Length: 149
Image 1: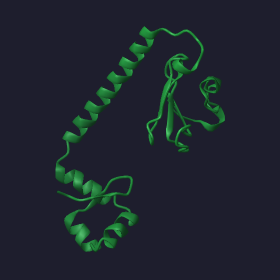
Image 2: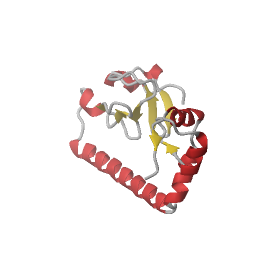
Image 3: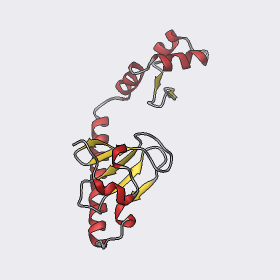
């Protein structure tokens, strides 16, 4: 799949700006904040029962609200309930996986993932690498450091 669906035009999105993400979604720029790959549009149902949101600013698009076609509110409710159920199942799966690990293992993993930028940040705070290693200081993906408590 190379080109995003032409229906994107009907909801205010430029198909050429979007790239295939997975079997049910496309990623591209957000109309609100301009993030280049922050907006995800889910196309896993028939048009216009699509929705999308921005990972960065939270901007949302519900295609059925943007197009001038009749849609079935009950079908929209079923789709939203299905999506909520999927999100709940994913959250439960994530919790179960995390429960398999000890706090010590998780902290070690976060410490191992530190990049040079993370290490440099800690050093800029007056904490040398040897102390970072001793305390197993870590990070979170947006480069904010994480302190073991």
